[in-house]
Amino acid sequence: MNLRVAETSSWPAIERAAQAVGACIKPGGVNNERAKESFEAGEGVRYFLQESRNAQYQWTTVGYIRLHRVSENPGNQLWIVDYASPFWYRSIRLAHQQLDAPLLAHKSAVDDGDLAEHWPTLPLRLPRAEGYAFHQCSGTYEANWMLVS
Image (cartoon, rainbow, N blue to C red; front, side, top):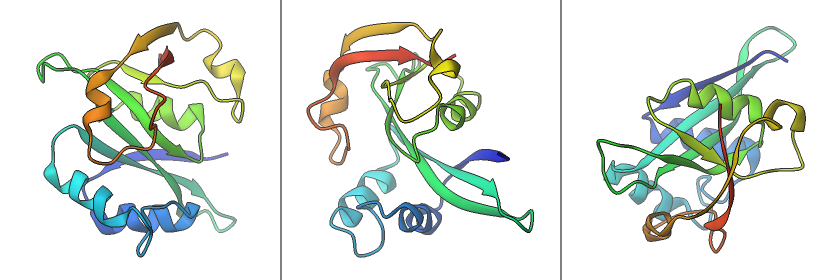
């Protein structure tokens, strides 16, 4: 599969990606306004578009990845994957390659476990993540996280 991941600063592009996967932040979705406000606040939330090539070899948006910064110190950043749809470790790795900081992700049985089998697992509690006005991982911030590499 030809896949690429690129960070976006465009809310309409995020909405189109959310529409593609039927996410709750799509236009008219139940969490659209809260997610938009969180994104426009500009601190600690980043979105990456997932794109794949279609049969005509054109790039098509197939989903997105949302990251939250969970470190207290902006100079020493730590990010988590709050949401990814589709949840592909390959996409998460491509997003990580664009960060200048560590990235943590949850384990998922949906994807290629071989890719992530050597990522270290860390039992962490991330209280800062619970403070975001909008986040997907409600109640799951005290869990085992994998360090993306």
